[in-house]
Structures are given as structure tokens and as C-alpha cells.
Amino acid sequence: MTARRGVLGAIVFVLVAAVAYAAPPQPFWGQWGRGPTHNGNVPVAGQTGSNIQARITYDPFVSKEQSGQYAAGDLLVHYQTPLVDGNDVFMECKTGQYSNIKNWQAQTWCENKFTWVNGKLVQQWNHVSDWKPVPFAALTDKDGPGWEPVYHAVLTRQAIWVPGFGGSVFRLDRNTGTGPQIKPFGATLDPNTYTVGPLSADASGNIYYNVMQLDGTAKDPWLADVPNSWLVKVTAAGVPTAVPWSTLVPGTPAATDQCTFRYDTTQLPWPVLDASGNPAPVPTIACGSQRPPVNTAPAIAPDGTIYDISRASFDDYYGYLIAVNPNLTPRWASSMRNRFHDGCGTPFLPPNGAPGGCRAGSPTGVSPPDGQPGSGRILDDSTAAPLVAPDGSIYYGSYTRYNYAQGELMRWSSSGQYLPEPTYGGFQFGWDTTPAIINDADGRFSVVTKENHYGDVGSYCNDDTICPPDRTASDPAYPEQYFVTALNPDMTVKWRWQNTNTNSCSHNKDGSVSCTSDHPFGFEWCVNAPAVDGNGTVFANSEDGNLYEINNGTLVNTVFTNLAIGAAYTPLSIGPDGRIYTQNDGILFVVGN
Image (cartoon, rainbow, N blue to C red; front, side):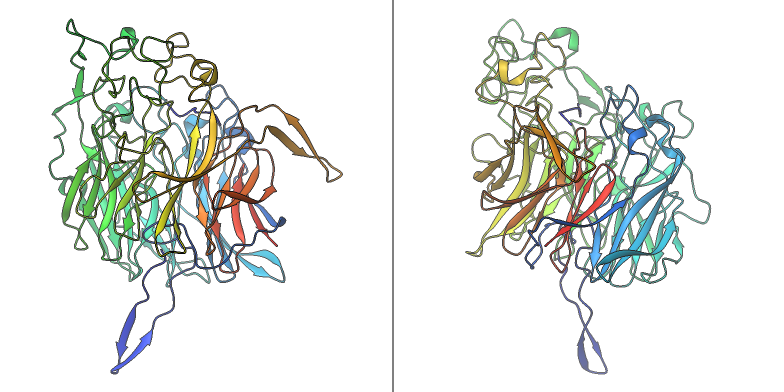
């Protein structure tokens, strides 16, 4: 795909007639990152065999989605996590028609239920939703998505909930796939109001999700401020409450305030310096209203605190992690601005004055676009969601362009204090990823994430002379490489495993596999939410078409599905029997012993 982009819930006890009865357990893998905290791990051993037990096509439009000048062979789509409970599997599906990426709203989204019957996944029902994603936005300085947004259900004990039109959701009976449409904004559904991002659920079965309203009178809604946004809670019984987003972001800039942006591309190389050799003042733009990004799932901590992501509509350099009390009042909002010191003159860029490096004489550590400490940016194309760790701290993968578009992983305490990585302030990868937790044998925990050092992207700009796209040639000390990485809680590296496979492989009609060595630096990880089993084995899918199984930095096994160059970034999940549910090119693969 190259760098083309710019918990298990607590068991609840109820008292009936003075006798305590244990409620049924939470769904085994019920949502993004498995449970309310998005920790991505299960207490069972994953099946590490190589038998592909099922293949189910859920997106019939992949070849069309990869065609055209804009996609250029890449699959610019986000997909749902396979949801698994007992013998049941729930997965999104798509029907309707597909003309081009700029008209993705012509498609129809649906949810299928499958059940394992005599070793086969058998479809039980299909529910067609009226949900539509927000409209396409070209990848320019304006905001909005250039990848098809995610349609993402959530599974609870009582029901499966799926996104609906106009900021609504459907509460479906798990057995029949039928049920009411919950409409928090009234009976008349507004076509300019959108349910955005995966739905999340807490341990009691309450649903949380983000809603965004766009300006339907604007020629391009992404060039206009958002009229409204909301955080919505729907109780397990179906009672909705919509809280205006503006009430949840204390201390953030007003819509009409001026926000720092970045230097003009006519002034490369960056940063621009004044006569004294200091970074020159940076242009500003109107901030726009704070709103949720398009693809983020709220996380819910064990104490009921809701963690979500907010950004300024016109300036993605102004992002915030927000904490919301269980009664939907604001707790705090912590800025992602000026948190990093890994820019000019550090090992993550070529030397100042050299191709790919900052302007000669630049101060050490500043980010090239604005001459300030680096900021975590919030892009609408990212599916990154907050992760609540066992110690209560919160991790989030933000975007940064100035480090080869790798982004930065960030961490906060539950009180909103930023907890920087010891040397540079953040871990040097965070783009479009929700990490998972490894519960270590000594009672501690590790954080596992992909770590793509993209090639063919240039260090901090799109000028091939100033920022050469051949990363390895221009920056041999920091070359193109692709890792799965485990971090200590403070984001220092515990172990890394590098994908050094150079072979593009394909299945032949006779069942054999043919391979060509054409990726000298390996393949990028196309997983955006890895899965971890009870033994600490990490499961992650790669653009080379393999499912990788890694334990403590050692490769356990690989399973080849099919080549996926330009693959969508996709999550995977683990079932209660240890089966692995992974995705590749619009196909769900189930892998096991």
C-alpha cells in the first residue's frame, strides 16, 4: 500500500429476590479492539495452524474500487472487525452499485450473521441498512475522507447494533436480524447528519457513537464548517441521548479563532527561517468547530469514563483526546499539539541541508512544517481509536507527515496528563493503528503495534527533489522497513519483528503457489488493529497476503491467503475456540488448525 496516505467487559451481577445471579458473559469479540477498552486480546490460545477453514466475500466491488486514477490500484476502503460470539460470526457486507470512489454513497451496506454448522460457516440472516457514509473529499489541504469510511456494528449480550441513516442506529435481535431503528434526532432523518466511526458498547450494553452534521447548502461541505456534532449514548433498552460535541471540549479554540497551520509549499525546504536563524512565523487559518473524526470508535474505561478524539474542522493540527464522565459531562480535553521533539537534526530525518532533511541551520527537534515541536494530527482517513491500558493510561495513534508519514503513538494518564516517550515525546509510528495489549507473564503489560517505515513517500514533503521518494537511498541510516513492535508502557521498545519477505506470491489453479522476488525492503503491515491471544501471540496481516503469528519477537507461523498489494488497512479478531478471522481484498478468511 506504500504511504499513500498524505475488553472484555466486567461481569455484571444483578440482585433478584435477594439472590445474586451472574448475567451472561460479554460477547467474546464484540466490537473494535474486542471490548470497551479496545485492548485487542483474548484469554484463549489462538489456533496457529495453516488451514483456511472458510472464505467469505463481503465486498464484491474490490476490483472497481482499485481502478481509476485516484485509487491507482490501491484499495482505499475501511472494513468492520469480524464479530464473534460462541458459534456465531457477524460481518458487514456491501451490495447496490459502485461507479467510482467519488460516489461511494451509491453502495448499500448490510450485516450478515453466520453460524458454524458441521464445520462450515452458514449464513443465518442478512440485514440491509439505510446508512450512508459522509461524502468523498479529495486528498488536498481541505479535510474529509479520501478513503471509503467504515461501517461498523457492535455486538452486546442483548442485540447487535448497526449504523443507520441520519445519525440513527438499528437494534437487531441476534437470532432474527430484525429490530427497531433508534432515531436520536427525531422521526425525520436529516440526510446531512451521519453516524461516523465504529459503534462501541460498555459492559452493561449501552452503545456510544459519534455523529457529524455537514452543511448541505455548501457546494463542497468539506470547505464549510460543521453545523453540529454529537456524542450519542443509547441504553441497552434503546433510549437515546445526544450530547452536543461543543459541550465536551473545554479549553479548545473557538470556530472563529485563528489556528497555526504550516508554511507554504513554495517556501521549501522547511522550516522557513528568519534573519536570526529562528523559525519564521507560521501562517494561520480559521480553526473551525471541534468535531469527531470520521472513523474513530469511542473507548470506555472500567470506571465508565468515555474517551474519544476531537479535531478542528479546518486544521487537523489541533487534535485532542477528550474524557467524558459516565453522565456525559466533560471531564477534560488534552491537546496533541507540540508534543514531539523528533524532527530536524534527529535520527528520523536526513541531516539538515541534505536531500530530505530540513533547511540548513534549522534548530534541532522542530517539525519542518511549522518550526515548532511536532503535533499529533487527526486525519479523517485514520481508524485509530483510543486504547485504555490495564493501568488506566490511554494510548492513541496520531498522524505526522514530517517523519515519512509514520505518525506518532501518544499516551496520557487517566487524569489527562500527557505521558511522553522518554527521549522524543512519542513513539515514531502511529498512523491508522489501534494497538493491542499483551498481558505479560510477570503481571505487567506490553503494547503491540505495527511500525511501518514507508518507502516512496519522501521525508516531509511531496517535492521529489527536496524530499526524495527513494527513502533508503536518501536516508540509509533510517531505511524503508516494516516491523511488528512490542513496547513497554512508557513506549520504549521491548522487541521488534521485521517482515523481510521479498516475494509476491499467487495461487495457481493446481493449488501450488508461484512467487516473484520484487519487494527488496519487505511488505508493509496492513493491519490496523492486531489481535493477541492468551499466550501473548500476536496475529497481524501483511500486504504480502500472509497472516503472521509472532510470539515474544519470534515468528511462530505464516498463513498465505492471497497477495494484497495496495490492500485496505483491516482489523482481525480471534474466536472463543481460537480460530483467527482475518481479511484480505474484501474477503473474510477463517484460519485454524
